[in-house]
Image (tube, rainbow, N blue to C red):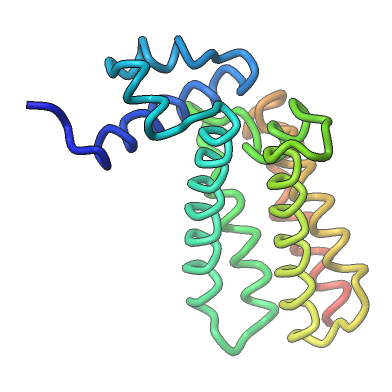
Length: 189
């Protein structure tokens, strides 16, 4: 009995996501995904006619997971925008898993795809713009009307995203909470 199309699609996406994240998107061929998923090429191409469509699905899944994680953290502090900013920083830190952290999937995709028309490049830009907008919105709710705080928070978040795979959790990324909290307090107190 063959697997249902949705379970086959999810199996392909799960295998591709793990490989893309651990080894890099460009390093993984469709043949490798077929081999590791145990499904046929026909099944792969039925669900994802091109590698670009698979890449987009991979990034969409990360986008959904990350925003769901951030929204859940921020919602716990409804009505307290300063606490929501700090909760968002805590939520970023929770994404750093020492046994499985190779950086932000969007920054990684951005580094791999310099072509502005590639879906991975566009999605990476959109993720960072959305994060900046979220930070700006929370900062404005807390009383900071210009974008200095949100820009600086985005800078330290992306710095931490980039530092963890290189220096580990004890390196400069460990300073994210301290630096972000100091910035939030400086701008909002």
